[in-house]
Length: 470
Ligand code: URP
Ligand code: ZN
Ligand code: ZN
Image 1 (cartoon, rainbow, N blue to C red):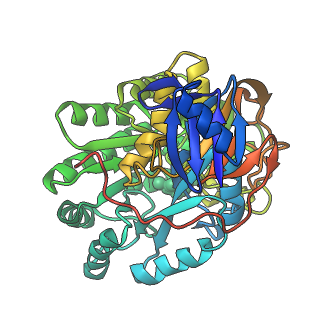
Image 2: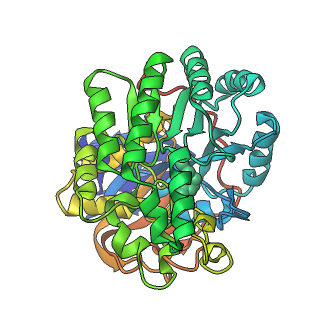
């Protein structure tokens, strides 16, 4: 089975070129100069032809931060691997890397097996895992070493959530030393959770229980302090470091300083930190703000966080945009914290909207087309050892391809999204551009507002090491 994509503009991390693409089975077989003799021959012998005139042909999105079915605060993230990966496909994402969780008191391996069981046979697109290390000890350190060899090469630690996921500085240092030896990558949730818990307790005793106080107590200083500390610990441990869901100017300054000093420190941000804010969203009337409770939190619109983060995306101090997709419905889930913001499950769903929302940065002149693809596809693939299988359209790569129509316009709504959520955090945002066709390993799984894939299409990805360290 061969497919020929013609008349499109192929976007890569290095630029835009008019090229035709030949897919053979699951793999990109060749790219051709349109109109060349070789192109004509390839088109004539192809089993099917897709006309991408006026469209961009981009490598499928790679979202390296999702939480399908995550247990959190007595409930579970509302997207399963089935519903969440299907929604991702609708939005032009063809690979996710989700987080398997070692919970306190349990073995890493048995927890990872559980995550495999949740995902296997259910995913619409290819998927890999990072491992959340909920308890750094001799056994988990040993397992981390083994996992790197098995293709699970990145580990998330938390400086937040004392008593749940929290690691102290000694545990963090030990995990970093381990990663320095194995080539693994430590991903850090950088917020000072001990200080946050004090402020949260004080807020609730004052009667400040509304969702907005979630953001007020998780102060930006406590993100920059933890980011700074994580960077220093990584230096002592001689390990590279990847900061997840960076939300604020101060934390970005810490990352920028480290990078300017030559450290192997990387960071991602997420669309919620580029589009949403504390006052209008977390502070929305009634209990609506609960829909915007996530950690790190949304930041105040009275400072320059959004502008600074877009700048970080241009300068590469922010190298990746992921979603931290962790949806909860308002009904029965976010509502758990109606009387106390600390009981609102933390997370926002957005796996479907990342490609469109970051493309608005192209429309608005914040970034260029090549940077869009680099941030959403190529760099995440390289950062987490999936390149060039993912993240690029070139001979030998998986034929994960999105045909993107820059001339469409629509607006995001709970009424048109495919995530299992009863609201949209991005309700009403006008989008220029739209995913028209999605191919996952050569198969068309979305085409003109129709889903053509099925559960179990997606395969587990064994990953290599971070390719920025080689
Ligand atoms: O609020 C969030 N981000 N929930 C998911 C867990 C995490 O810390 O990434
Ligand atoms: Zn986190
Ligand atoms: Zn997360």
